[in-house]
Length: 482
Ligand SMILES: Cc1cc2nc3c(=O)[nH]c(=O)nc-3n(C[C@H](O)[C@H](O)[C@H](O)COP(=O)(O)OP(=O)(O)OC[C@H]3O[C@@H](n4cnc5c(N)ncnc54)[C@H](O)[C@@H]3O)c2cc1C
Image (cartoon, rainbow, N blue to C red; front, side, top):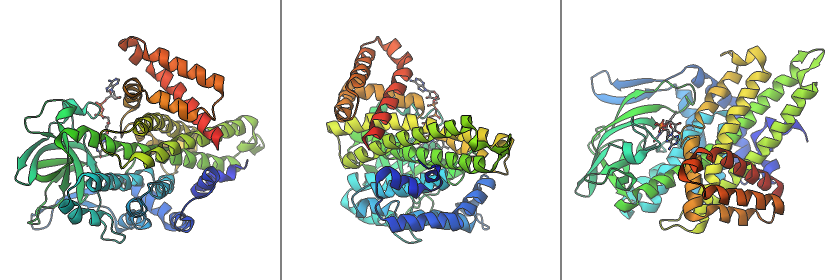
């Protein structure tokens, strides 16, 4: 098979999927990136952290993020193409995530605003009352420049993995709405017109059951800011999304869903972004391999292009196969998500199966992105570490993918939990049965059962090896199915 497939996100998607919906839209989106987007994305990354202008000349608080106009043009391109509105208009997540794949191939960080906007619209649509939906949802679904953005803010300074312990933002009831006070320490897409925010209901217990999910507008009805951005964080990558620290002081917000459902809604938000992270990670891995290919075809050592040296060629072949397997796993997570994203608690078995596959995909693909970006740097040799070329950027971008939306530990431990409590591994094995080698399937299945029977301490301590094996087996079986 030709390596040339690596060079285009659309060619790769078509190869993997047979055909891609809205081909013309996707093609136009790709050609915009080739014509203009690449250069804008490069400049945004190189200019580093944008300025935060907290006050205007007259001393009024404004909290403006000072990206150049080209940034906003690049950002609006994806909204226009349909990263958010298509999910609702077409009642399917697939076109949105395909646009996400293309976005992430060119600029992984830019996929973040899109997915957090979708992850704001989804719970609003599902759990908002009619008045709230009528007021805010159309803003997020606009197709022109005036589209509103969303954001998903859960993490506080004490830690993001253990939200039950560390969310200290308090929500107090106040008539038909709530008032939120606290601080969000990692707030991506700061400046968004709407955010969904985790907060503890006043008087609720200090665990995950005490959390609710709230819709928070940027502006109050009197035109004042409803939240403040304290600063924009200096990050190694994903500079095309501003990540801020956000202060809430009696900030007006609306509770989504029933109070006792809060943690489920938070997990539903994470479901959307974890699958996006998986799709985006594969796209970044493809980009890294594409860059390695381009370099290896031209760079000459020992009398011939380095790609023609057997060792390097074999590495690229193997990595290409890995990429295809990882895509199959991420795509499976997406297909399952598409079936269950409208569900509300109590969930079906399909939902539990989805959760396991999503944990496997998030874990596996993010690591693939890091390894692919690292290898691309190695292929570039010394050129790879220079800030004036691209290779070092993909590694910086990749390093964020395993961490946000839940670290690898979280994916492994939550994956164990859904196997233990919901038997999700059995559902997975049933799904894979027609395509897996029977003996291999039996071996993996009995390994998982034996692992789940271990004492708690060992079960956790030895979980990564099992999870890695399960992810590899699942991705391989899914890739063979095609
Ligand atoms: C660029 C960027 C943007 C972000 N944007 C957002 C955002 O918009 N909204 C938002 O809510 N969050 C956001 N985050 C936060 C992100 O979700 C958290 O960083 C992540 O969930 C991990 O939380 P933490 O950083 O507090 O690490 P901690 O939770 O403190 O964890 C530290 C380490 O301990 C490990 N650990 C924790 N518990 C266990 C355990 N039981 N067993 C083994 N190991 C364990 C973790 O896996 C991790 O390796 C962002 C993060 C980054 C880097």
